[in-house]
Image (cartoon, rainbow, N blue to C red; front, side, top):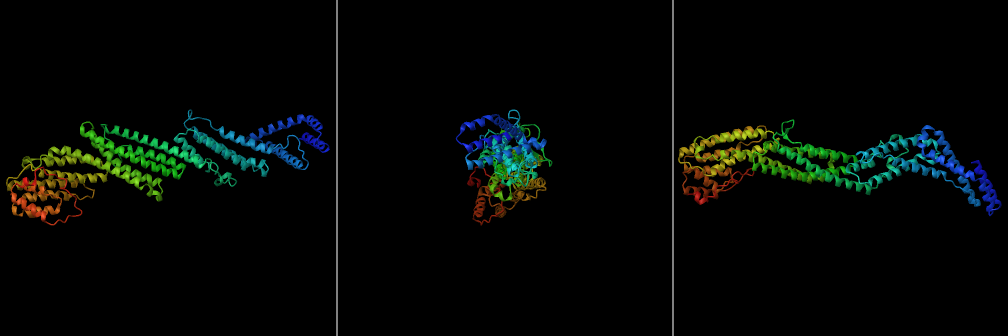
Length: 600
């Protein structure tokens, strides 16, 4: 450096004496020619130390201090030479060296190279390549900045603001690297990893928010690593991929569940003994995993994913409903083909309740209370479909019961029934046997099934009366038939009271209609028929003329005129229907004999 100063002084003196004498100037420059090479060689050595400064400062901080001093001295000479140039117009060759600027450029390139060099794997070699890459970056950057703050800062003059400058370099290099990664064809899980790192990890205590970096580093003042447009594009790609994946996962889950329906083994039971399949658990485990992932990224994404899950759930349940219906249809075509049909249909019904509970749980966990109204409509649609599936499932199980009851129901109100039939005994035993399996149905649906089964049994009993399979020949037969009807009403009442035990449902009144009809048959004085039938009609306002005509026909002793008089009188009477009355006769069709014929 002394040689360089000597050269510069000589050239300056020559310039002062004769600024146009280039020959002497070149002569001086030539004489000191090797000195320029020495300066360049020194610079190379300096930049090598600067490139390794984060390592050097730990092992030999004095070396780094020496390098910085050399650079700072050259900076002072640069300033002096520039000041002299303003005054005289002269500046020696190679000035200004701008070694401070070059030093920062070297540091900048070093930081970029260090960030880029952290990718050790590719997707082909390791599916977790991006997670590993980002973790290495996190560790390296945090370590480097801690070294810069705690050690390097002491080796540089305060006005260099070395920590602040390095922080900007790392932030810029990271932003470039994140943009490069974002531009790649990332898979859904990789988008999650990248966004989680960019939006959360970067400013967390695990990295820039580390307490040791404060107060010099204020994370709130850091600019985003990725622009909002890039983030939105990544989120859009992620949501599209997630939609596709969820659709596929749900389809596969349903196909697996359908295969179980054909098994010869009963489905699993939960801790309370209710039949179930693994479908709800599989579906909601998948939803839960994706919501946990979304939560790591942002609150907004979490809400979007929850909304997506509910949308997909709605579509999925429509397919579930179709498959359950097809399952029923296939079974009805060949009742031997599905050995555990009843048990799996019970499981399907129970799954509906599990789905409902799981949706409520999911919303409670991931949806802020103030946002619940957003998803009310989608939740209501889901509940409606689940109710339909459960309702059809219960109905199909009752159909199964009544298919087996059909031959015994056909025996009601026949000569055999009037003699020594055990049809109702068999009906009660069969219903109770089925309800042993139905005990595996969860309470809300089981309660409804019990009521509906009771109603259908009573309706079938009344239908048997309306079919006019028998006409009582005399008072003795009417008495015998009425007494049998009363006994059988008590049997039904006892059975369904037993089945409804603990449900809090009062179903005893359903059998009252059988006893009321029995009273019509039992009556010995035909002149009182109008009063008895009017009482029946007042309790059951949906009784039609053809029902009354059929009852009177089965009784066997009412003349055509009496039938007509009773019907006409009842038609003129006031009607005050009970608002709580559930229609019973409305669905009962009397065989296609016209009322005039019934009146004969």
